[in-house]
Image 1: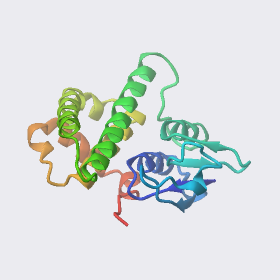
Image 2: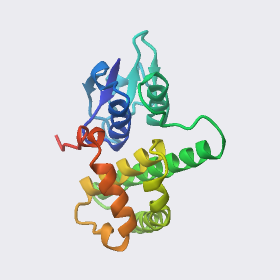
Image 3: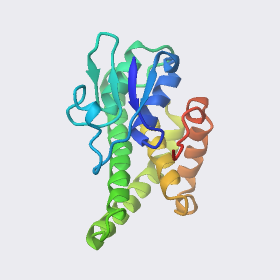
Length: 202
C-alpha cells in the first residue's frame, strides 16, 4: 500500500497511529507530498481529485480517502483489538468523538492558513479562538470517560488533534485550565504508536 503523506499533517498522523496500533505500518510505503490551499499537489489529483492527504493507494490500484475512511479500512484488515465499535451506542459515541477530533484538526489547519495570509480576517481569528475554547471545554468534561473507556478511534482522533495543537501552538497553555484532559493526553502521548508518529516540521 502507498500513502500520500506529510509528517506535518494531523490527519496523516491519525491514520499512522491506527496503522501502528494494528501492526500495518511496515506494509505502508510513504509518498511524501506537500499540499495546501496555495499548493494543489497536482500529482495527487489522478488518485484523489480533491488533492488532499492522507490518500491511500491499495495494492489493486484503487484509492481510499479521507482519514476516517482509511482508519476504518485499517481497522478491518489489521491485528489486535478493533478501534471502531461494531454497532450500537458505543459506535456512535466513537464516531462522534472522531468527528470532534477530526473537526478540531480541520479548524486548526484552517486557522493556521488564515494566520499565514498578509491580512488575516480579525473576525475569523476571533471565531477560531472561540471554537478552540469550546472544544477544550467539551473535551475536559469528557476526559475521564476518554481515559477509562476502551481505547479507540475517538481517543486517537482527539489525541492527534491535541498533539497538533501542541505542535503548531506550543505557547498555548491549555493544560492548566483542563487538567483531566491533560492527564488523558499524557496517556495518549505515551503509547508506542503515538511515539512512532511524532510531527516533524520538515
